[in-house]
Image 1 (cartoon, protein in one colour):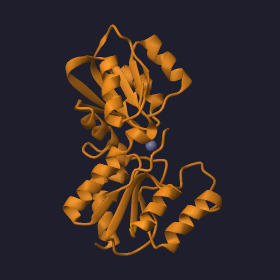
Image 2: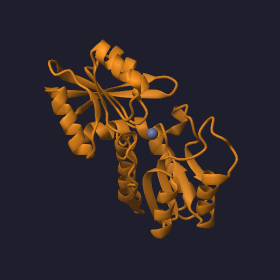
Image 3: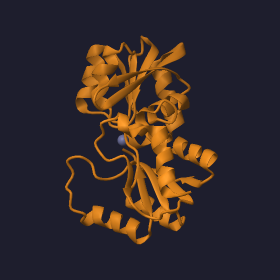
Length: 250
Ligand SMILES: [Zn+2]
């Protein structure tokens, strides 16, 4: 498929123009003009690029690309090496950040709820950048049971603040570095909040405001959006797609 038609299709699905993001969404580094083999992953790290080169991919599609607001601009050091590897191997780098968190179907939030077998209810818009997805349990569940379910599905230990005496009916989800949205989760009336990362103060807010809190890993909570998007691409556009999980404990 031609790169430009491919990008047009992705933009149609993900509607990046609707969000005000911290990085450019779409094509970040230009490579081959025809797309035949895509490697997807969470972050465009050197390890992912090396895996794409080994897989003879012409395109890398990620959630965390490059050129973040506020980062140093010169293309030197680690950043220089990554971009040089892409250009020397004629590999496109395509990244979607917030559009791939909030998409109702293959967004990280929606995918995480689905993985945890929680029914997605409504999304809460937090202009300009954040969004929480609310979910509801068919049967109220204890914090301990939810912690076990998350650990089982994501295959890693959690940082959690659980109140053993109250059950959870509703949960707010914001994958990745979403710990700052705990107050919005409270304001939305959620009994629990699941995100990727935790700060020291998050635990105090959880304890003092009575919301059960689960930090399940930035990487671990953001594996599922780009993977689902890759599956959709393979299915509908007939392009070979391989998801490569470069594990990250954070
Ligand atoms: Zn992230």
